[in-house]
Length: 196
Image (cartoon, rainbow, N blue to C red; front, side, top):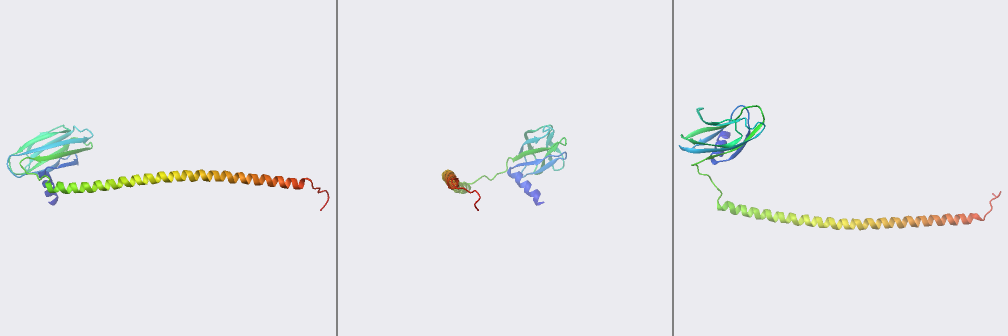
């Protein structure tokens, strides 16, 4: 019962809803608080075979006031002559997957719109959000600058390591060649015939 009351309240205030359609009618209650209220239902169907959809408004006793067949979008207007509950129903004519998005507007029912205090609160929240975005923006630039500096240092370090490696390998080659030359020249003039 609470669920039904919640849906009725949302409908009376004029809200946008969506639901999946089936071959069984999907109905929503609209409570007409006074006689001769104008009910407007805007809807659009999406999915497969969208045109295979029926939309109708009926009384609590089941009498259909208006029915639109084979439609995928549109607007239905009906004058609700009596006080009480009415049903706005959507039905798929086939088994294809369909979603319907719709909203109700019941004229003659006062709607509560935003007050100045709410706009002031929203303005304060937007200012806080703007400050947070500016902080994020500054942090992103700081991180970008830091990454650029680190990339430059990394590149310089990499070049230094490469030069250091080339110099060390060159020194090792020179030392090895000079050792080979010294050992070769040392043993070149020596005679090793039969002496142990």
